[in-house]
Length: 294
Ligand SMILES: C[S@@+](CC[C@H](N)C(=O)[O-])C[C@H]1O[C@@H](n2cnc3c(N)ncnc32)[C@H](O)[C@@H]1O
Image (cartoon, rainbow, N blue to C red; front, side, top):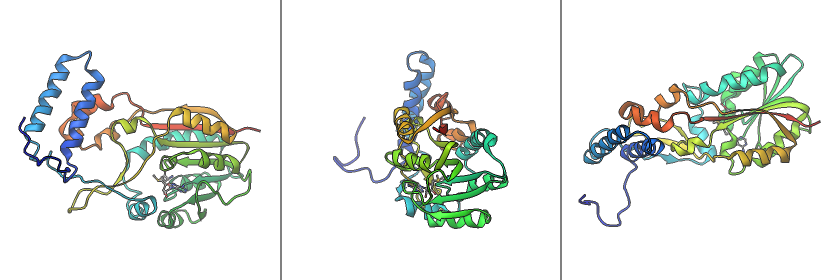
């Protein structure tokens, strides 16, 4: 194929074509050895994509802009509580795992609480709730939403509580922002009483295969997509951190990507068969239930 780009010139923009081609490639990789018809259909889509790469939708400039954690969440805080299929997939597991341990005499921590999603639910279950987050902008939303809880601006790796303060704790979708989750998990374990319960959720390692990140904002009105970096932790990393923190695993769930999650991908509109094959059967979340050793 003739190359019309200047030699050595960097790609000016990150285009939808780059992402779509990745989804097509991944779909074939996952099934190449068993379905020639499927492969041919995807190759035809790829050929059409390359032939029309300068036309919509392939030409759409996504140009995702990375934000450092505090800046990213300051921008995201006002819209964070909108529709989010990842959160909708996660919540039932957290509620299911925590419910047996809740009640009026329970002191609960929402670690990296963000806008107080789990703090609100824990308070509604009658618990006395503390929430901690590094982002003052996210905490401002949480304070408004859950006036009965106490919120603290602090790092997960240095929690402002004495040892064994809490009966239960949750840390949802936040340890992905730490390159190594160990210090955060050790702190969560430290402030949990012996026999107490901790539930941790995080985007699954599989998300990395699909190019997942903590994306926010839209590509409307000339605004770029925006994102905060996720680090994907392997099972070995999680288990090593739990051992270091004196936590025992009582449950581990790896729910698959839901239809609502895959429907949120731009490729759902243009390459639905490829997306289905690329994401099919892959876990979308880590959900860990843990207890502090006595
Ligand atoms: C995706 S949001 C999740 C918020 C909330 N837990 C939920 O599930 O809706 C991630 C949150 O983690 C917070 N965070 C990330 N790293 C943190 C750290 N080291 N200490 C405290 N908060 C942190 C961010 O400020 C952000 O509010």
